Length: 103
Image 1 (spheres, one colour):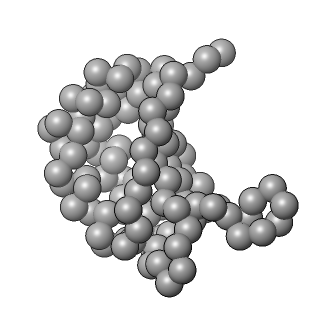
Image 2 (image 1 turned 30 degrees about the vertical axis):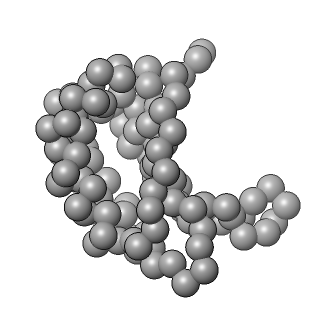
């Protein structure tokens, strides 16, 4: 399994609509990428760092794919639409981390 983590770094005066992200953007991901091997999407609303200070990221999504090829094919087919939706819920530039899940 491959985990794609998309996170949104904290920034002063940044805008982030957690409800839109959870309810609408997540649904868009599931609708467009399921056929490409997307197995699940988990959303984090970050509360604090380990020391109780503000978190380094506002939110994150963790998408589980059967393969990296599936993720890449899904983004090739639907990436433009998915990325255009980002402006509807935030003005933060997301960062992406691709991981192999080791069990």
